Length: 396
Image (cartoon, rainbow, N blue to C red; front, side):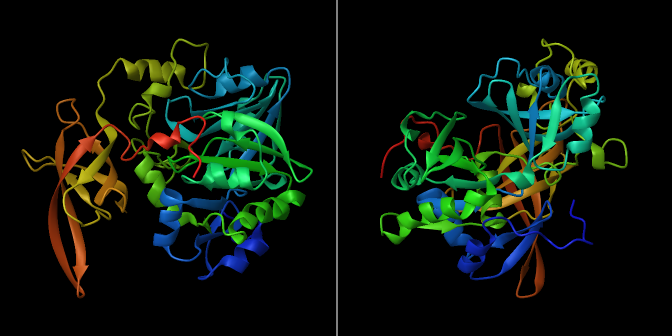
């Protein structure tokens, strides 16, 4: 959460972002001033899906974890088995409290032997330090010490290659490579929050503008279109990709006031991350017990009929009309030409329904209208292009 008594901080890329912004439409993200919309949401969305997008990732919470017990500490922290995560690889994780309820999700980067970076959506330093008691481990907040850019889209590989970053043809999804650009060090990971071909670039703040200029010089030379994007376009593509957002799509365990409003990984359709066969981790006993019980509710993906977006909508069983849940996140998908959503629903006789009805209220010339939409429940990401995983990527 942002401390509103403090001025929002500019990222190392701020001057370049301001120069490109056509809207000056800003939001706060972990104490940084970050663009919500740079030009138009449509142009930014299609930059991700049709060409190349750039987004400032500096505000993301980042922690460097080192020491003799770094691996053991991380394996104790998260529900996934990360003991075999090799140097030069990244993996997606969630971590829980003792009741097995999700605190946050993120990514673990094994940067080099015994050196890890944990990236999270929310501030986690207090929880990490509390969880590290008894371990010989160092945990350092490095959010402000690492400038980061996300470069995503079908031409991202070609753009970065033209910018002078070599060796990307062998980088597989979730790989890390340490290299140089114009004489300074950068780390490149084939990761992202868009579900598309893409990379994340990490360097020291004093190199930020040089990194930015090297990328956008490719556009100046007329080789590729490159667009800066903001949070609103990212919201659209991450929903299409099937990625959830803690604190937005579900309540995180440390923010819940009343019992029953937090969620286990099983209820978030993240049970595939839970490894009950590994040594003890926080929440293991509760998750082992929960795994033996039938689920009562679950986060599901919906593909809706019609063109109405289900903002704040309730979900109903199509057979008996019972209210069984609510939409948590939604978007109109330009590439699918469909309205899509995440919904938190109660299961019907322990089963996920194949179809539900969605109650949608919308305005038409200032008059509120009610529209009922049939929605198909799917267990797959809404959109997954082949280019996301092809190595080497196709050059355009």
